[in-house]
Length: 493
Image 1: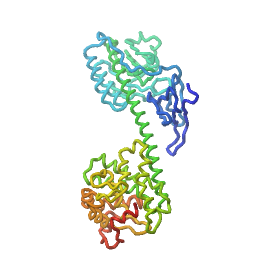
Image 2: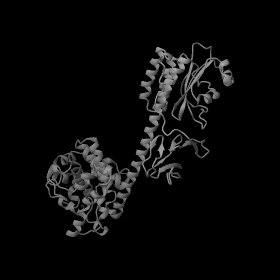
Image 3: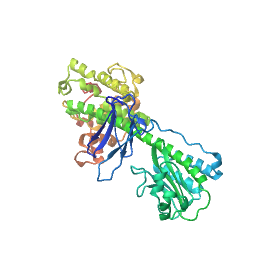
Image 4: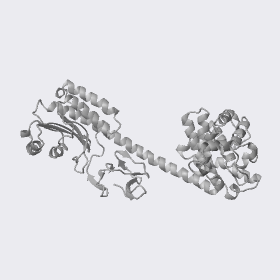
């Protein structure tokens, strides 16, 4: 199909091994559960997944717990399953059966998993078929026949799983089977007699070459009524169920792909943040704390929940540009020269340039670029004034300042949270947005203090302290700490 089409690789991890499939930029593509893999991406496979390259299909089969998973190869399948419901001859459906088909379609549409689809199908058939035992059977073996306990949903006269004939199921793989008497069962007569079945309808739940299972209808008593109208109803419901199951399968595969991309993105961001922390151990955890402070400030200021989440993400990456600042400048304990400060002051622009090529970062770029702007226009890099500064940047500016004042640096000790909050309130209209400053001033200091404890000392507070103790500590007089005016925040950039 291609010189280098795809790679199928066994990968070990802490959670256990799994197969991963990755497309190598092939022309015809690699498909998992009829969802195309983006070129260059990989996806862990799960039992039941179907992987297709052109006419070749692999099914990942679930093996017994004491065996490794196996790959079963099939060749010559259709390139695309036909997504259509077989038209019904109106004369073959009684009015009650048509009502059952419509009811099943509505219920199946609302289902969110295989069990819900199966239950909807069984419920509809049970109410209109006249058969005593109804079941939705899952195809669990490589041969396509259910094993023990494979009934996903059932309704029977006894309340127990129905007696199922394996020979009937194997015949039903090729199409619906309808038996109205044991004498008409042919090579399946033994199955009918052993299970004391008077009549059976078995319909495959399939779409294209994908077999999801079977709808099983049977009676142990004397036959009563023609089976063909019931079989027509079951075929219609099976087609609807198969289409719903295929859509659910594709949706879950798409969600898995998105989760893989998010995990890769999150890992990349964490690696970048860890790189910054490694350059300056005195600010380790700074980005994580700013993220939490920013989310809290946005929430208490009445911003929308989505804006709060954007602020949290922006807090994580706001200092990404410090990757380009020499360590001797970041760690310098003395006053910075003008040239050194200019180097640090370039980090918002550097961070913006690093992240602007990442689509997921589009909403947070204004916060990265402008988080050192001041409300009075004396900030950098562009000297924006007031509401010309993006709201996300104003939120990060407050969060950044709170963390800078309440954590120790090489050139000064940490200030109490109460003092930091007083400084933010005092700087309303000059350094900070007045609305945000008021929101910070109205906060319970214990909420703010808990963030400092969470990221500096791990879960909880230092030395097993309680939030009440943190409250008391946060209310220590501001004079107990070294003085630091807002303008001095330029030192920490």
